[in-house]
Amino acid sequence: ESHLSEMGDEVVRENCSVFAVSLLEAMKYDDMRKTKRIRDLLKSADKFIECIQNKTVDERNLINTLGSLSSEICSLKDTTESSGVKSVCEKLCPKIDDFISQSQSRLDKIEKTSSENPPSSKKKKKKKKGKRN
Image (cartoon, rainbow, N blue to C red; front, side, top):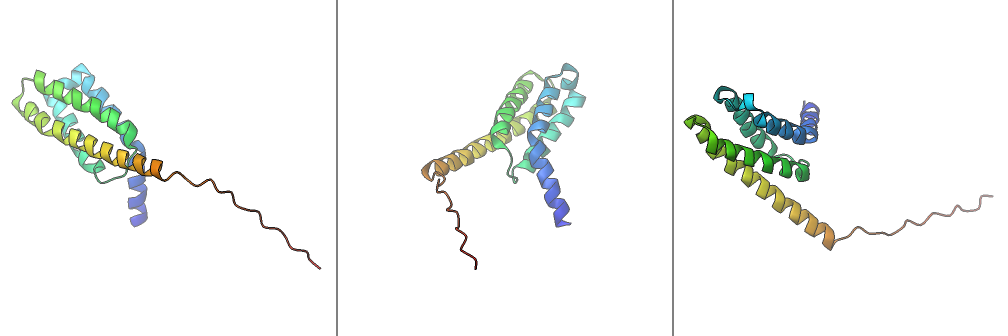
């Protein structure tokens, strides 16, 4: 069972950027911006953020996509006439922005650590074969 869980986590990590791009593209599509459809997209985005917060994902690509997604959601908040959609957007934008800032600080820390400790370039010596009698 844990093996299946690990496999599932791996699939999520590999495809989270693709999913975020799909969410973003769907939100840009005019027919999906109707109140009855956008609610499902916003709910999906909310669950997606909850899911990836505890996983190590390809954050560099994801940060850019989520930044665009956050902008799109904030734009939707300003243009929608639905108070329910506006309310969800008001909760979701800061949630995404928090994830982005946490991810960025994690990446900065990793980059700082790797620049302070560059990988060693020592070469392994070949073992000499002894004479056989």
